[in-house]
Length: 308
Image (tube, rainbow, N blue to C red; front, side, top):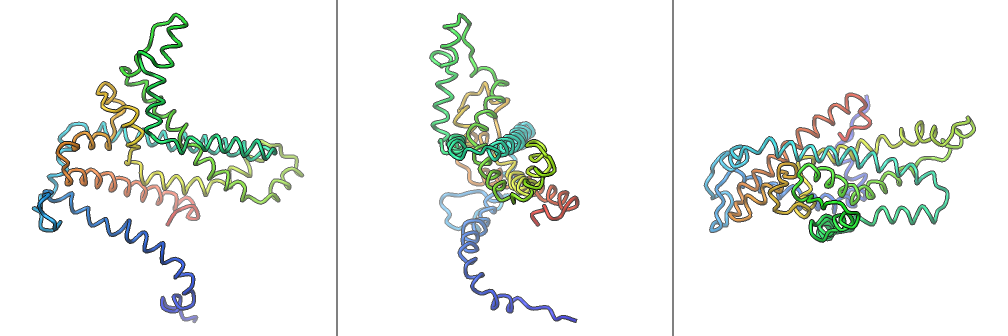
């Protein structure tokens, strides 16, 4: 019977590797785990005059009341989850499709230029994006209405059409973010051995068959990992995107209001740390349950694709 080696043995044997890992562990400890103590703010009455968190008055679940008593919690949750599901599905489908197409292009110069152009919007700030959107759809002097007037049509007030912004928000999110995911998938494709494709060519497989039977199956692991990471933050709305594009236009809140924007508008005057933390706890717990559930399902289907 082989005696199992202990933790101290592994530390001593791979001490150089563990020393290299130490900065990463310290980073996550300082920036991710120690701040979790602040969750306690969700259960106390925040007091600016008190410097000790644990000396503040404990109020239980009172800070959560403003969410469910608002009567909007269900709608806000549906909006937040709905948009994020659309973002996850469409970004991955579009990113994989474009990455596969670019991988089949043999012109290196054209491939690099196209990749850079598609990746460039990722660096555009949401403030600049809001300026672009406003100048496109402004009722009085927007590009869209200016063109419609010159064509003899009536101008369209998109800022009074809530349903139209479901499409617009998704489109601009895709424009800004899909290039980043596309680069990740393209990097995964470049790591696939050419031997697979050469063997497929010998067997008579065309470009579409090679993409379907080789490239896409090889991307499954990358897709599952990105999916799980995205699902973990499915309750964390893209606050910058929604707030900058919609702002305080109450006419659009029915279809564009998410948890983050609602909490910001509700608490920006009172600045109640407890209520804000309560909203964050609700989002985090929901995301944690979801990612554990999805990871468990994936683990049962194929444990090699699960995160843990």
